[in-house]
Length: 171
Figure 1 (cartoon, rainbow, N blue to C red):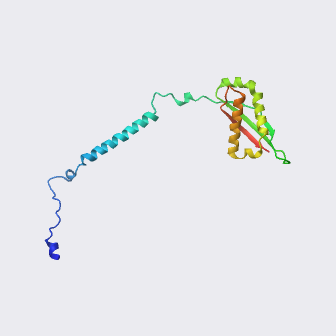
Figure 2: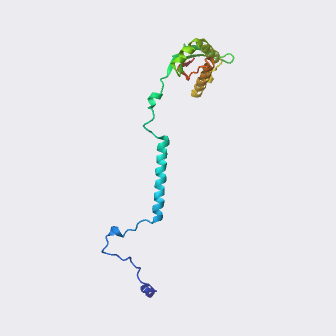
């Protein structure tokens, strides 16, 4: 066996040409790899260009500040109602300070004559609430949405943007 190992020629080492520098000895990537890499770069570049065009920030757009209208707010009188109770529970009261957010200054003049109707809608709805209806942020959100719906019904065809609470006290 030892003789077989000796008979086996040593692995051929690559011939080193001492005349060529080391950098020239490197192989270039094959043509197939270069085509795939080029296609990948084209796809990435096209995707980036498409995203820029779609979401783009072209200089032709109007500034966002000019599109935003300032909000108009109208304070309403404080509302104090007793909440609905079951049986012999002691009475609970709700005090609310409400502000209406309007989309335009012209709407203020149009809904001012309808304020008694708005206050009546608030009073009748709030008197039917229980203290448990106002628990947590979900309860306040439902209250805000319902009051917005009722105000919009009272001032139709005009519309308000939102009902905002300045103060809510349940006692």
